[in-house]
Image 1 (cartoon, rainbow over the protein chains, first blue to last red):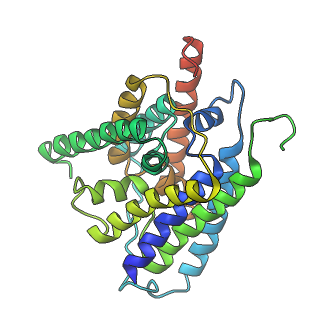
Image 2 (image 1 turned 45 degrees about the horizontal axis):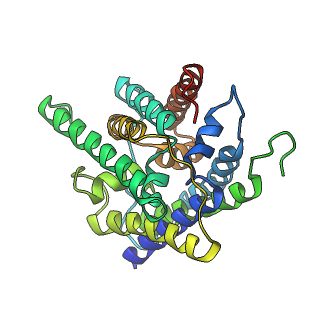
Length: 140
Length: 147
């Protein structure tokens, strides 16, 4: 059942990204181009997604455990540190360069396989390199 | 559709956002986890050792790809214009990969799930990735590289 819900969640996520136009890197780039020909579509996507999730967090407050798992596994850290800020900034630059963040990039494997696979290969390489360096320097 | 913004798709965007929110709600209320795509991708590929059980991460990622394929099958080709060369994709991908691990999340985890939770950490992260993204696009445009 948990497996089915994970698959269902992914299916809805992919369909939602495709419907909303977020699988189009030039449209995402258009949202970030606030000084140029601004395309506000992403704000509608983010707005309604956050709205639904705000209700979900309210419901979660009344639940002792998730419907299909033993407990909630949620990020507990509240620390706002240099890692968070530097990481978000690097992510932002990459997002602005390619017009792609992880969700649309992975979904795009089904739509534009070559560019999507190129971006994802680089992204996974970046993740792996970071993890390697991070473990060696003993940060995590 | 939206006065002053001829290329905007507010209705498709809103409905698509509802689906994304519902997807994240199913992950939270059903499985008890954050639907963060960068974290799930790192977990599904074995790059990250901690986090969701492997089948959960792998099925979520598989669903993302199949969901996109299903949409295209039902609604027709998905319009997409990618950057004009592979260098953009490689540079962008590397930065997104490093940044999302260092900063523990991306648009879905910090953006959708964290903002709606009113997590101060995610609010800082979202503001911090939006600003460099906007500045990057502006700098590329100023350098004549708009695409």
